[in-house]
Image: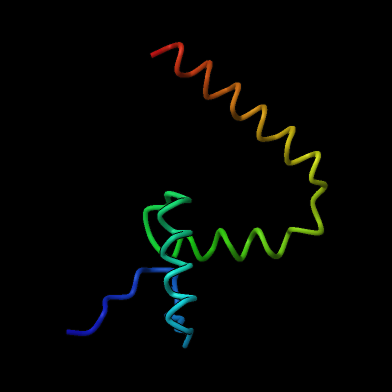
Length: 76
């Protein structure tokens, strides 16, 4: 049975070592994304922006998000 393609996506395949597949699986589990495609996109985004975004700005953004989530948790 052929794989059904999701609208707005394209198929993409890689030949990787077994160890790389295991590392990706570990990252996928640790990052908590729903799909492996989401995990792959997040890794690509991180690598592509690594040297372009100020690390201190990212830390500030993360702190603000954490505070916002805490406030939302207090409302529930």
